[in-house]
Image 1 (cartoon, chains in turn purple, orange):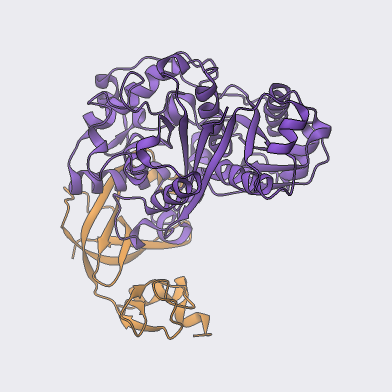
Image 2 (image 1 turned 135 degrees about the horizontal axis):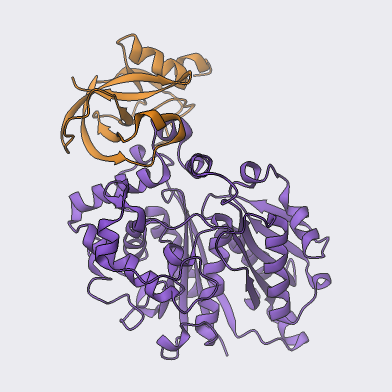
Length: 388
Length: 125
């Protein structure tokens, strides 16, 4: 079975692009990734495209062929949807295809447009990641869903909003060097605590922004990379996916995310690594509490211990396990369909030393990207390694 | 069960309104909520209705300040998950019940409606 090499990565800036179309955003990211890989649109065998609410935000379904065409290809393509895990799932399918030798060169990525909708429509769109009958109908918004988890976490394990604030501060600090980030503002713990409530205990600065943007990764087989003499030292050595009951009410715990746990176990087994081997991680911090849940489900922290990780400075870029050096979803932004692939791209660049925050790391060899859908009813985990 | 009327979301809400709330159970004693064609825990297809307790205890809640659009006139409002025993439900705390909500508080399951769409709601028992 071939390894899957990351030959190139590309992304648009994440932020407000209300005058750009989704097809143009993805074209920019895909062409940048192909350029980075020293490849052409004609070289692409298949396209895996993640997107969450394009049918609502742009009235556009059937986006696969549209996105292929946008970057100058007629390669077979499909839209993959798993709420916020859409492009993590796209990466997973792409990895499988390349490792099985079913394609030599694939593009995997995603795109989302949300800022062309007003707050009410954006809120309503994001809510479709939750159970429409049992959660959306009673008025649970996406922030409310994570707030229900946050309160349950505090109740079971302790911790408070100040602990969460340290996560937001850390991720904002990291994004200051990332010119593609949606938010490049330094914030303090007091800023977070005093911010307007969204769904308590979560406030405005516990929540990632609503962003537009696109990202793409070019993956190739071993043989192709060698034949073409490509510069592709980072490979995806582990891929995992997990699932859980859709509605929070039906789960055994509101403070744990077994979908991430299962995805991580599969990815670690696949890559033949353990959590202790991970040098750097990009995790799904759509809300500050989500970073805590992710770190514990990934086995990087014991349950109940990750709440204080940022406060204790362990997950800062100068800490023992730097998390979300890109700024995370919180500051880098979260164009929903683009996030999973953007996380993989960030880890790849951190491993090759080309990321703006790469100087925080000392010869990292193994990185991890974790992408979650909804209240983690879906999750993907990818392990990346430098193999040369 | 092939008769979807016995196990639909609408029939679930109808039953709450009629004062006869139910949940779905299987021979292994698992609880779930409609619509179901099999038990989600053990996949047993021999599912049936069981009476559901009318009240449950709050296990988590949040005050929503940025409302779902349909509830914008209601904002801020509280949504909570209540544990009724065999199942838990997510509900909208009805207007008029906005005094201090706490973990462990008992609430009664009822049905609300907004813009013609019904939803699970909670009120004081």
